[in-house]
Length: 301
Image 1 (cartoon, rainbow, N blue to C red):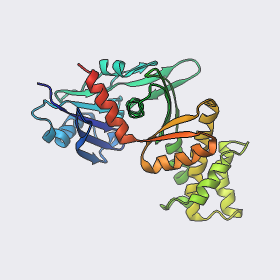
Image 2 (image 1 turned 90 degrees about the vertical axis):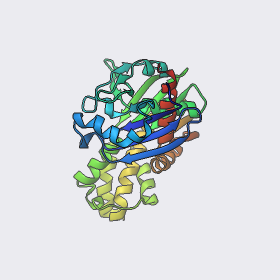
Image 3 (image 1 turned 135 degrees about the vertical axis):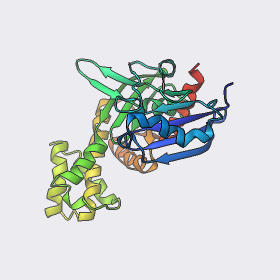
């Protein structure tokens, strides 16, 4: 017997997020979050950890579990395929993989691009992109999904047709904690708006990103950039560079759907407005994941 509920799980490298969802309304009835990402578990531990977290929601296994994200990678629970573009939600639903060791649990596939000019991979953000499309009630969109590895995805006629990854979050961390320009920002510091805007401006320097990052050092020495401003300056350079590059690649786009946390969305909105995106629609990343997994579950038979 099919349950009127489902369990949606976004399981990444560093975080576990599970939601008990009413299929009909999409309402979240309960949730669990932890730092037990892929890095902290061995392959054999995945089914046991998952069952311990959501077992109380399962109605003796009648409530299905859908898992998205890096949980489906080689280093995760069990490898799910990465499908070639173009891909729609039906294709994702028809290629889910049974999660070994847990009944009625399904791992969602990712997507990939492999060509002579461009090789790229995605796991988890494709679900968010389709969810954002549903929430925005459109079949076409340019989606920005900021994070450790930011994704920019183009969807047409309800299909994911292209995407590109930017290592913005990971590179920010590396520059801040492992380079000379980032040295004053080693201690945690609050967001500093003036320095962030200076970083956005520096990202436009014709010498490019590699020079703009070094300005965190030279401005700290000679232009009054304080210790507590260096981190925000570097953030502005990184996000500004990412957004400016994508603006040039999508020069005709006036609208972009921004799918992330409230904190990241606020920073990306500032960069997008400066770069000339006129219509920015914000969607919370959790909400997009849920909408995408609920829609996929309806197509999975």
